Image (cartoon, rainbow, N blue to C red):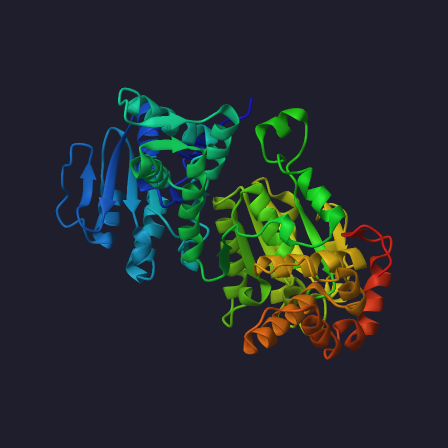
Length: 505
C-alpha cells in the first residue's frame, strides 16, 4: 500500500536521523508542521529537542534559555559543546539569514564533524534553500511536501465536525464534489487551507462546490508572487473557438482524467499536448478554454522570461517554475511559443550551454513528473524545436492547427459578432467565408473590429459590406508567409493530428 505524503516524510526524516546524518536542511514554509514531525520522531527515538531562532536563542522543551545563544555562531558553539546523557536533536529556524557569514559557515562545518561523533542531529528549517558552496557536502536537503488530499481530508472532516452542531452553517458536498474540493486545495499550506475553508463558510454560511473558485483564487496569490509565471482566470470556453473539432473531442474525453475514478479504471494522468501551427489560429485560445472546461488553474510560462543575465539564473528559474507548478497541481502549465527558449539547443549559439541545461531539466521533468501538471505547449515554428522534444512519450499528442476551413470561418464570424451583442440574421456567412479564404481566426476578428469602428464612426449598426471592405483591403498571412505555411503543412503530414476535421479550405 502506498504511503501518504505525511507518513513518507516522517519515515524519510526518521531514517536520516537513525543513519546519523549530521545536518539535515528541510525546505518548507510550514515550520509548525515540520516541527510537529521532528517532535514525533524525537519522542519515538527518545531524543531531547532544542529549538533555536535569532530572537530567543536556544530553548529546550521546558523553554530553558541559554545565555547569549541568540547569536548564531554562539548557538552553533553551544550545540557543539553541549554534553548530555540523552541523544539530542537541534532545530535551527531560518538560519539561511546568516549563511553568508563566514563564522557561521565554519561553525556549521565544525558542528557537522562533532555531531557525527556525539550522535547528535541538527535540523535547519527554512522556506528557501541557501547553502554556501563550503557546506554542500556536509548538508542533506529534504523538501517537506505540502498537504496531500489525505491530509486535506482530515482538515475538512475536522471542520465538518466543528460546525456540525451549528444549524446556521451548511456544508454540502457530494462524493465527487468533495474530491474536486480536496484536489483544488492541493498546493496550499495547512494554514492557507484552514483560512480559505473558514473564509468560504463565513462568506455565505454555506460551504459547497461553488466555493471551489474561491479556493482557486487563493492559488492565484502563489502565482502572483512569481515573476516568471502568469496566472490566467478561466474565462474562455470551447464555444468561443470556431472549429478544431478533433482537438475539442480529445479534450472532452479527458475532462475526468484527473479523478480517482480514472485511476481506479487504470488510466494514467494525461501528460500534455503540443499545439503546432499557423499563428493566430486558436492555439492560445484553446489553452485558456481547456483550463475553463477542466476547472484547473492555468499558468502561462513565457520561455523568454526563463533566461536570466547572471550565471545560474536560468537554471534556478526553471527549477522554481517546476516547483511552483507542482505546488498548485492539479493545474495546466501553458508553455507559450516554446521555440523561443530552445532554438539554440545543440548549436554554436549556445556556447555557455545554458539553453541545453534548461532544456534538459524541463525534458527530464516532463518524462518523470508524478504531479498532475498538464502541459500545453504552443509553437509557431517547429523547425526551431529540438527533435528530442517531439519524441513519443513527451506529449500525449501533437496537434497541427491549420488555417480555418470554410465552415470554421463561418463559425468564427458568428462568434465575434455575437460576442459583441450584434444581430446576425442579416449577414451572409457563406459570402464572408468565401471572401476570407486564407485568413486566420485573428485576422477575421480584426476585420470585424475594424468594421465595427467604421459603423460606430457613422453612428449606425454594422453591416455585411463593412466587413467585406475590411477583408478586401488587408493581406492575409497565408500570402505573406505562404512558403513557411506550406512547409509547416508538409511537416505535419503523418507527424501530427489535424486539430480540425478535414475540409477544403
